[in-house]
Image 1 (tube, helix red, strand yellow):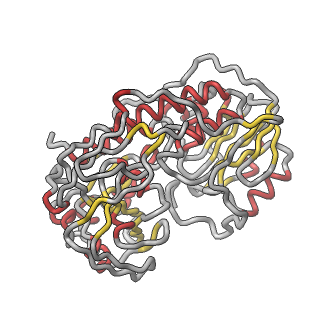
Image 2 (image 1 turned 90 degrees about the horizontal axis):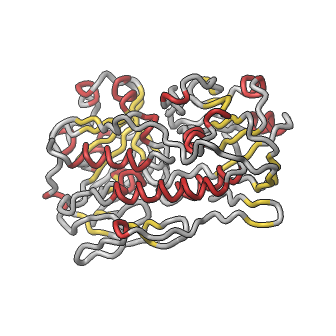
Length: 416
């Protein structure tokens, strides 16, 4: 299994997950929100007949969509979808500053870019918010698992999660030189010399972590098992857990939480604001006449593993943020991902597929993917409309998410 295999380790942690880490300094709360000034370019934009979009993007629901979230899921869907309304995307201060641009147009009339595309964020290096961070330590914070943790040094940081979010955030805070251990998903060039401490793609090698003599370990439940949790707790090294949920609206708060744990709260606020602004600007590039195309995020691994991602996976947020409708959510999936049958995929009738580049390659490329039962028998399959993107960028939900969204918008909608 690679670093992005959605199948969790068998000994998955049973500790209750918190929806937000809510870090606090000892004696005074570290606010999980920052007061931002809304930029003119990021004021809500609504099309006639539509309310504000959902957090991370507007959603659509089929008039008749049913399915069961199992390997034998089947679905029937109508040809049209109506726009829904929900909480708008907000800045860390909770002020709605950016709504998706989605026109109330029948999705069957959508004119998308033809054929297969690769979403390329281009040369998007890590841009530290400061080149001279000055951690103010010690700091006492509350971890997502309810523990109180005192961090006394950020000299030797290990940051590990399934998608590389924490490592990217550490680098973006200007503390990349302090990172001594990373997960395999932290794959950008700036981190290439940092030792990888995950085995089989996503399992933690606790012995390798402790051999690095870390002063603090940053992680979350996307990669922990009960066994690794216990081993890390017994090591005596401060371990701070963060909310594993991947949402567009949660990007800023997570950045601030990481910064607070490393004693650079002010830098975290600045980085969160920059990231929020870039995400907002990217979402404003969605064409106003694009309708609401239905996009299926399909996980491929070799010739035998095909999973459809759905609500709570992060893929749904990504799809909705680019003005599209998540196919897994539309057919009624209730889990993050499920093996999908040909009948379910045909019923979902996606207009486009979104896949990880390495997953597509492992399956044998586009021709092999289109031979998977049900894949070719959809509007997306008939048009060979498959958008692939580097897995180290796609689901990170970190400081570079704005670039990810821009690349996806270009790949999905642009004719060039």
